[in-house]
Image (cartoon, rainbow, N blue to C red; front, top):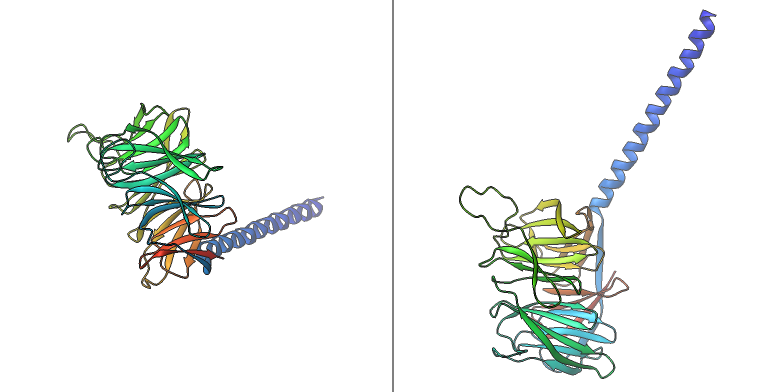
Length: 313
């Protein structure tokens, strides 16, 4: 009986060792996969270009069906451009009146509405796209105040605006331009120890219910989850090589990353909760990009203001 018991326990011991070896093997494979994922680089190559009739001076632009929406800083207006580069319609001009711009800097599109943040006027000017007639018209505007910088839209009733100026907060507005909530407020006094103060020029992007803020001077990304009117911090990533712009394709966040070779553009890709997904290396240096539904990238080059380029993996 003793020998039988010993033999049984011995077999059990061997099984345990086998299980531990299998777990260790799987762990090694998992770590190896994670390391490969971190080293993954997807290269994009320019495959096409569109020539515009005149220099665009776009500081922001978005790909839409059958064309582009661009924010032309030189002309202080929003433009609708066809896929062949033809100017179809525009809205706005330089000035302080309704629908006019002094320093338009940020732009977001939600459904048929185009939201433009003017940092000098402290206003959000909303234009409307009419796809059938291929026209853009002035819709309305509201005061954002507080030295506004970035704007991102979750839906019609949840419009987020970063205000690093006087207010030093992230404000949530409704469709009527009324403040619903203030987040990440400034310090009240020298004894206030609250973290994550919006004390820097800050851009913002949204993917689903998740929000990413890029603090340009501090070179850091902060990821949040917005639910039931509350903003919950998920993760913070600091990297001295982070560079603007911050972009999203609706699923992931893309942050510019400084590299030695300035003839290329490099982007770090993070998912909604701040997990690193990989790198994108563009063949040319772009200062502004937008995404197509088929994962293609459209970009603008600093020295070529009259061209827009298509890059594909």
